[in-house]
Amino acid sequence: MIRYLSLVLIACFALVLGGQPSGVAPVQTGDLRVIVKNFKSDEGKCNVIMYKDAYTFPDKPDRCFRTIWTTIKNGLVDVTFKDIPYGEYAFASYHDINDNHRLDQNFIGIPTEGIAISNDAKGFIMPRFKDAKVLLNAPTKTIVMSISY
Image (cartoon, rainbow, N blue to C red):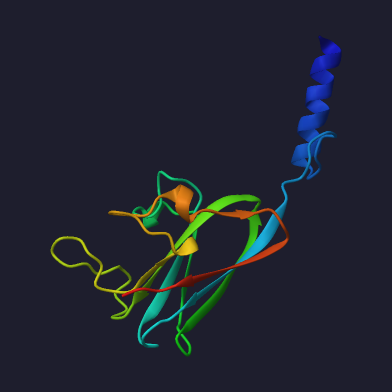
């Protein structure tokens, strides 16, 4: 019992001092580049939103994994999410034409600004995470999405 407690204490001190106990592999990370194309103008801004689960995708951007706001140049957006743990992610993006930091919708909830979903996934009401997910399992990956109005 004393030997077990000693090992636990040594492992805890190693973690506090920045090390890892043997047998624990570091988390692999990579960079995910997202290109969004076919903007009809360079007005306003673009929000590229990264999700890591079906619970938040695509209608809970306030609970997303990461987000990047950027300008549009020549009808194109090119952003990179850096140091992302390997795994499955889905992306949504919208053209915030009036720069009010939200996706504008009409009275029945249909977007009035352009939107894009990874894998150009479509759905009856909303696309599903399983249709939009992309796998990051390499140091770099690039995905391309097309914006629709």
